[in-house]
Image (tube, rainbow, N blue to C red; front, side, top):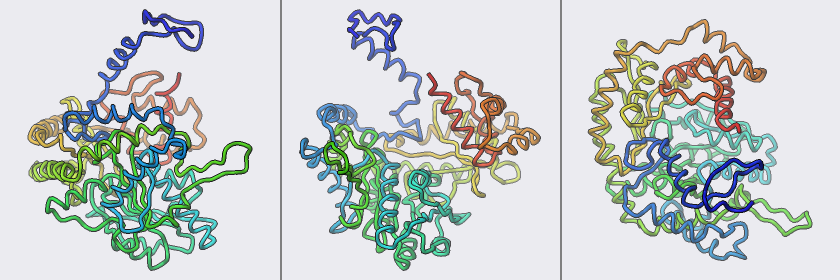
Length: 497
């Protein structure tokens, strides 16, 4: 289709409209971004990681552009890919590994976890003949493990965590191990509550039974080592811990690279080889894929390489200091706020708190009203629903850009709490909740799904509601499988053409 230099954007009878001028397209993209949550400025406490360093975004964009057209599929044709990956993985291994550690650059934490589970499955299949593999997980483990288990035909075995500290229990992990266990997982820290699992204890019970142990350090792996350099205590969690056999760390979190950039490390090359996929039984080129992806742009690798080398070890230590200083003002401020209860003992950069009612118990309605009130005041705090006896709460991910926002955040939080207590309670009709909960998620038809979503104020083609409390309250009352089906249908409705 020929370009339309005038950028008229007029309708076309074909699948694409006439071509438009570059400046018009970029203007449209910028206009679309105006409806998104801000990714810079320290007011969005989930999904984004803001170093607050001038020029960093520009560096990442320019580094990406240099390698955007380079195909990471074959480093023998594009040797710069191997050089960049060896530099990035080598830097991560130097911080989190021991001699002999090998690793791979991936697209994000989910892919890193998926590859670690695949490696453990294939390692156990080859070495122990395990054909019905199991994966032992604390209940606070990231859903990426369940996704990996679903994709790879591994049975997840979920064990409870301590109900007060929210830390995984090594004894519960040990009790769950069977001859079919191929991997156990620990978090450093867990995303939901920001607390450290007892990695050494979990790795020890796994090693006693000859089972691999993966540490999900996706969120803490590039923060905790530099936090330790500030002089603050950090529990051992990396590959230097006996029994830890693999570890994942995201560089697009506290490495401040653009998404997606992650690394998965293994204790040695022999273990890592189970991650690879190779195929020669076709008439095309011999294929080897280290990751779940085949063709992939080397741009993300290049920007991660540039960001890591630009900030450097001293720079990351200074950024960790800024995050820790923000947490050291925020957590006491939360604990000093009436009706607020910080959950567990935050390891540093993640904080979760619940809101209690007049009876002193966590109150879902107050949590959700507070989240809506904060959003109206220009802050995004992530609501988390109740699960397995753990209370509903609000989650905050702190970044260096948070540092000068703590006092303003606390002031608006207190105002939002006051408004939440004065608001109408969030009520879910028990009869409605009971009727909906009785539905079979595997047999729901389109009409039934639409009816349930309508109860939550979500209609066909309608934008997401501005206040999410009624929607989330209904979800909280439903069984997990039904929640999953409804969430799938809702998100699917957002992407229909």
